[in-house]
Length: 322
Image: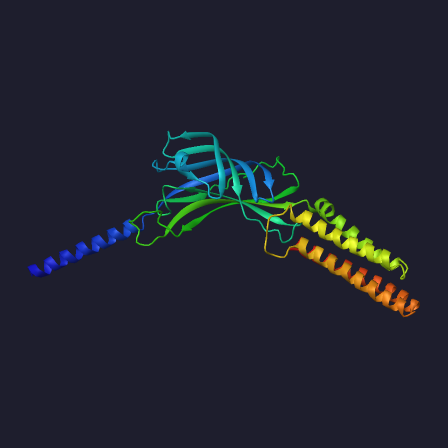
């Protein structure tokens, strides 16, 4: 009987220890209610993929061990400047308000440039406490940006705030971790912007289109004026290549085939077709087939112009709606 009581007591102690370990392992993390008000986004450097953002950040939490003034971390930020901070800890909840300016590094897609839509990303973490101790909760009451500020050449489409978990496949040198894996809660901000593209489009591509139509005019020069026709075509070819190099110099490097590459590629191919057509017309002239050469030039000019315009409209429409 005593043995049964001892066994029951030991079993109860094991249950208590197991439940205690589970409760310790799955402790509910403290929440930090976070909000943001963006006052300015400026100095957008498209080639270097960076921008500067000014914003107010406020944090509300009960755990007084959280030191966001010293341990606030903004990943992807090249520089972080805190110009103002105030803490109100008189009540049950700590209220922290900060004015911050960040130079952010981001990755942008330029496939549809200049009709591109970009997301400017910003996230906030606490470098001292992981997700088992701290969880961010977005404060979405009110607006998140000043509607009076404008971006030169851009339109602000949206600003969304959310929270998530950032996974790091490292223990940051902490040997108490059996697996090099840590997770930190983060407060995320995404600002959607789109470009005022019409003006930029014509600034960048007007030279290319002028070069194409100069080459296209070769069809209306007499077929036996071979020097003039070849001279215009070859000159237009180099003009398009030069225009592409100028545009590429203002864009970040990418391995994808962009709208800029597509339109210049089409133009180069069609100018090459003009040169080939000129060579064929010259061959007809050498065979004393002047009427056939004129007829070929007329059919080629109409066909090339229609196909060129249709292809440009198609790819530009795809970029605008993409």
